[in-house]
Length: 438
Image (cartoon, rainbow, N blue to C red; front, side, top):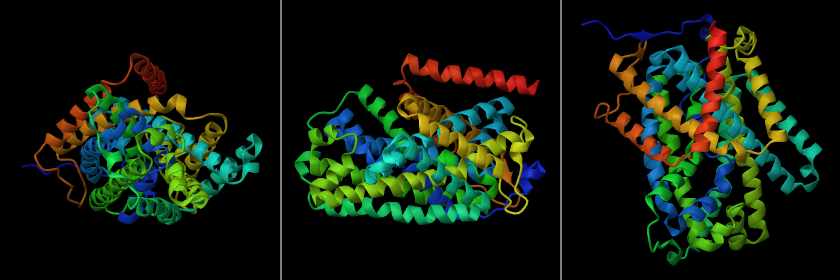
């Protein structure tokens, strides 16, 4: 019997990266890119769609994302090249499919980061009203991105240390809210008299799925992880269990304290409304500060992750080779970091995320489906990193198949107009791909 094929980095650029990201650093990155500014609006939005049945959507969505992350864990333990999902798909299906997955990944991460960054500037403006005007708001964003880019250019270790610190800081106001609110919950507010229609469940799960996204971005710097076969599965398990428990606890407390009608009516800032009901004005201030910290943590995590997608594109020849330049002193993809930060900052200054939210959701679902199939094929081929043992999912391809079935169910709630929007982006990307190849 021939030995299983092994992977090694094909380019010198990949070998120049420093493997410094461990289990806790990656878990913190996943947590930060998942728990962003959306958590401060999530309970109101879900309650408006589902009523008292809202907590059940979290359970369904947690099961769905659980299947997805299992596929990511298996693929990530077998492929350690920078690019994450882009690298998984490209290895299995070739350059075109890899490029399309990379486009979906970059589009999702960039628009989501711009949206959260805009929310971050809004929270800062609410705390310091003079900074809410257009010009000061733009300056706040520019300074914040300059600081984050500078930290990440200086080294991936410094970037992960910042993420770890912010992960702890952003948790405190949310945990305080859950702890104080738990004793004030009215059980009657959690009783659902009737179940919503299946179509409503599918649409709500699709919307809620966005709140669980982030793992695909955090896994992009795979070429800078220590022992990916061990680091990736453990970090994913730690982060996603914590995220799921946090989300369900916040929904239960928010709904139990305010009630369905009041929570749905306060969908723009539901957690601030809950905190004000529990603790008065100081509680509202606490949650606003927590929102600013949370969104800044998301920005720091995405500043670490998303520039590596540009690096991977350039490494594989889809962008100018200069974008794969590694800093001679800090050993980081500095040009990619600077460009990505400038693009996101510009989008955050002049745009809101609402117009691109559905595009991001659909992009994520398509990307997750591609990665589930890629994980299945990587396992079938026996691909693994040299000198390591991969993480193997139990029950063979069952998890991969269930993942695709769940995603197909959620895609049934996507409208024709939303499909056309994503299709247009992929058509443009296809033209660019073949033009570049030629």
